[in-house]
Image 1 (cartoon, rainbow, N blue to C red):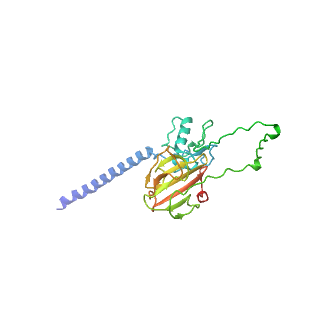
Image 2 (spheres, rainbow, N blue to C red; image 1 turned 120 degrees about the vertical axis):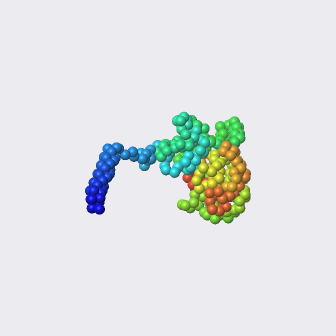
Image 3 (tube, rainbow, N blue to C red; image 1 turned 90 degrees about the horizontal axis):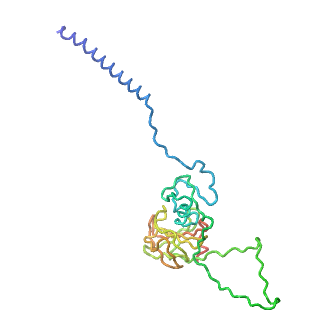
Length: 270
């Protein structure tokens, strides 16, 4: 019995030792290879803004995180289509669907382009009868800079019937008018539809009407849009139906923008 067990007791320790030695050498080799092989770094997201804190040149906007072309146009009182055309004119490869942080977007009409005129009043000019010099009215002198009278603001009609549930404030860029799904949404003044869609987050189905180079109005959360981009609309015309797209209750969110900046529309409503 002893003669059988003794050989086995000598073989097993040797076998275990050899196995441990092989395992140690294999681990050492793998560690050496791992240290000598450079690790591949994950691709980093490049912020092209570089000096994004630097102000954009006059007439341009520098793209920030979360921007869309439609939002940039709205915030600067421009039609998205115009912004695309202006940028394609100076950069034929401009793609409105691909804008990156730090890109410069032209937001003012290039020199030589014609201003937008939605409703131009034509005044009949009557010739002044020629009489004696004493009877000829003297021309009215032009006012000096200190006497310049500001142009009257736009007059708007109410875009919907209903109770105002949320007034203009720092947190609300317009007013909210409660209603029922399908109730009419009306153009507040004559103008041209410069946007009709739902690509602006937080606005749902949205219509933007440009009245002139200064004023535009926005109508948000509609259930149905009845106009398309490029349409000319008249004051009081039905342009959409009230709804609750991208919001929690049925309402019309109505904004007035002056040179792209939101202002309280209530004083302008009649």
